[in-house]
Amino acid sequence: MSDLHKPNRRAVLAGGAAIAAGSAAYAGAPDPLITETRDWAKSLGDGVDATPYGLPIRFEDDVIRRNVEWLTADTISSINFTPIHALDGTITPQGCAFERHHSGAIELAKQDYRLMINGMVDRPLIFTYADLERFPRENHVYFCECAANSGMEWAGAQLNGAQFTHGMIHNMEYTGVPLRSLLEEAGLQTAGKWIFVEGADASGNGRSIPMEKALDDVLVAFKANGEALRKEHGYPVRLIVPGWEGNMWVKWLRRIEVTDQPVESREETSKYTDTLADGRSRKWTWVMDAKSVITAPSPQSPIAHGPGPLVITGLAWSGRGAITRVDVSLDGGANWQTARLAQPGRKMAMSRFYLDIDWDGSDMLLQARAMDDTGYVQPTKTQLREVRGLNSIYHNNGIQTWWVRETGEAENVEVS
Ligand SMILES: Nc1nc2c(c(=O)[nH]1)N[C@H]1C(S)=C(S)[C@@H](COP(=O)(O)O)O[C@H]1N2
Ligand SMILES: [Mo]
Image 1: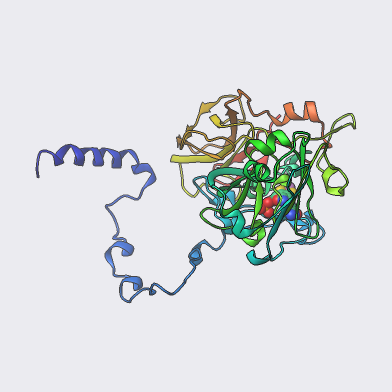
Image 2 (image 1 turned 45 degrees about the horizontal axis):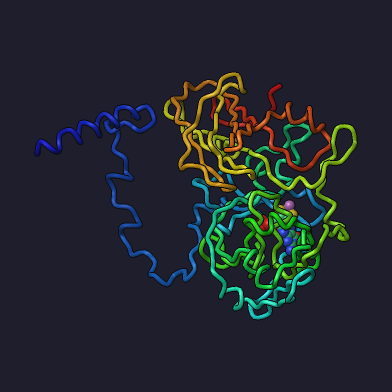
C-alpha cells in the first residue's frame, strides 16, 4: 500500500468507529444480502422504454398527497397535503405537491389558452401561449403556502403528522415571464394602482394585487421543476406571487385587469381574513411570515433505530426574505441549538436544515424556530394567540412541537 493511501484508510476506519453505534457490526452471522446472489442479479432488469415517463419505484408508493376527509364537504372544493415528512432537500416534485381548488382542476390545452390584459392600459392585449414564449424568461425557486396551512391547529394540537399540520406548501423552480414585461407591453397607465387577476376555472379565483408587487417579482409561469405545469397546478400558465399567500397564485391564468382600486366584488376575495380575539377582522395579510417545521422525526416519520447518531431535519421559509438561521430545541424550548442550513437561504424559497445529534434514547420535545433576513423570529403558539386569539384559521406560523418517545414514535403536542 502506498504512503498516500494510509491516511485515507485510517480516516475511513476512524469514521466507521464513530458511527459503529448506528450500524451493524461486521463480525457475526453472515448477511445473505451480502453473501448470496439475489434474484435481481440472476436476471435482467427493465429495458429503457419500460416507462417512457418515469414514476417512483413501487416501494415509495406511500409518498403521496393525502387529504383529510372531514375538512371539506367534497374533493372538488378541497385541499390535499404534500408528504413533507417523507421528502428531503427543498424541491417539491410536482406529483406530490399539494393541490387546492375552489372548483376542481380543469383541463385547458395550450392551443385554447388565452391571456387578456385590459383595464387601465393603452393597448388591451390578448396573448396566446406561443406569444408568452417569445418574452425573455426567468427562473426562480419559490415556496407557495396556502394561508390555511396549520389552520386546524389554532385551538390546540390536532392532526398527527407534518404532512397534515404543515403540508399545504410546495417549493418549486418556476420558469416564466415577469408580469412587468407583459404590463409594459400593454402600456400600463400611471393611474393603474392594482391588478385584478382571474383564472379560467369556474371559481375564477379573482384576486386583487397592488401594482407595487405586480411590478416587483410576480411571474407568469409555464414550467415548474423544468417541465410543464401539471394540470392541478394550473397548466398551461399560472401566476407566481413570491412570499404571498397561495390564494393569490392564480392558476389557469386568463385575465389581468389594471384598476385604480382593489376589486372586491367576488365572494372569495374577502374570504381570506383573520378573525382576532376581539372579533375584529384582519385582512390583506398577504405576506407569509417566517415558519419552520421538523419533518423527521415526526409522527409519520418515527425514529427507526435506537440511541446513537440521529439526523433531525426540517424545512424553514419566509415570505419576507431569506432564512438566515434555524434553531432546534430538544426540550420544548428551554434550550436551543443552531441547526445547519443545507444551503444559504434564498428569498421566498424553502431552506432545509439539519441537526445531527447523538441521541441518548430519552424522550424529546422537538421544536424548530426560524429567523429571516429582516430579523423576524418565528413566534411560539402562545405568543401568536396573545395577539391573534383562537378564532383565526389563516396565518398560523407558531412553533410546532413533536413529542418523541423512547420508542422513537412521535406525536403532535403543545407545550405551555
Ligand atoms: N384559478 C384558481 N387559482 C387558484 C385556486 C383556485 O381554486 N382556482 N386556488 C388558490 C389557492 S387557495 C391556493 S392555496 C393555491 C394552491 O396552488 P396549488 O394547487 O398549485 O397547490 O392556488 C390558488 N390559485
Ligand atoms: Mo389557499
